[in-house]
Image (cartoon, rainbow, N blue to C red):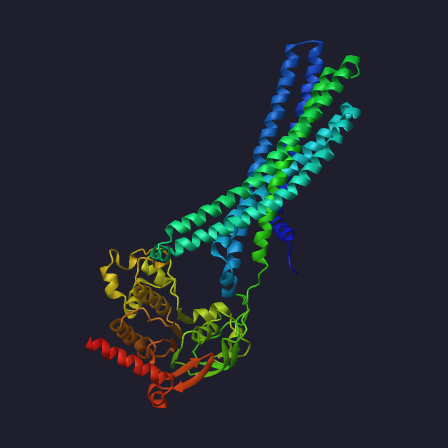
Length: 583
């Protein structure tokens, strides 16, 4: 059953119902002692109007101080409990939201902006916490105080109480009218904040491109325009709030004036004592100010629910592959791969990216994959790792369809170096250790050496412990690729996947890495995508993919005489190398 935003929120309340119920009891106790104070003052005024004695002053003074102290004590407890629980719920929601983001398919992130998701994970979660904590606490307190104050007012004077009650529908109408509009406008503000966050994130991530094309001033102008629009949207919310609160105060002030006039007449006639009139006014104040606070609470509710809807939009996206799906592996993978009649089309695409792919790879074999840009090579590797979900039964590893494997176990057995290298803003060692968290220092150094990083690392100030910038901005393209290769090698995978992983290194470094990889590949299945023949020529079999189909297959020696794409690629690259040597 699909949860609504409200039901999902109630689910979090349910996990903390005991503590929240205790907090509600504290709210009730605090409100009760708050309602006792006008009664104490009214009785004190009536008695003191007859005779002022030390005993009367001390008695009512102690009663008033005691009621205030108990009110403050329970006020402290209610804030400690309810606000504390709201922080715990926010903690759980943030973990759940982040965990859900981790489970979503890559295709989802291709359609979303990172900045907008960050806005939901920060601003929107904070707004929901304000709903869960302060809004709920003050709403409950206001409800108890308003009802309690009205009951006490009825005991003092029914006519004036009913007149005061007549003002409540006006307050409710104003809250509903302005609250709905504040909700819509605030959601628009939050959505636009996501747009700004996305723009900033993209510019910071692409700072090299921005500067390379001299777009700094233009990007500043664009941001200034977006910032101006963001301010205007906030001003719309402020204008609504500016109308709401003064209007509410004006209505309440008029109500106080009318009650004062009627009460004064009754006191003159002798039908109402001065103490009762003062208590009535105090109770009216106790009832009215929570109604004013109700406007602020409504604002928090509207903002919180607008943010909850935005979070719910992400939560309703179902992952393609669930982490707990599949039957656990009984033994380590050997690495035998069977691809059977595989045809795959990306969501929203009009034609297949891969068509009728059939390929058998024995455990321990190395397969080279070449082809033109956009022919489907990377797509094939993404399906093997279940980055994208292949049609059922089309990819089989060790005799089992990959959809029957738990995704985490399958990916743990695969060491993949993607075409686009991503590094974290950590040390080089930590980036390598990301492949296997328990890897020792020796394991990290060994992997770095096999990836050809040793020479570069020796020149760094702290060696492998050198911290690189965001996305590895302080490293060259070749150093990034070699770090990514080391990250894949450190996990000692049954299947090694290299997706054009040597494109950014020179031929000498490539040869050094290939020599190391020949040793690493022994006993492991390896799939190597490359535009360089030198990277795949010693593979056990080579396939050529064109327009999503396998158009050639064989070894280096058997493909050359066929004069196809592979032979043309080999001759072209051989000629280029000869020209470079002559030059």
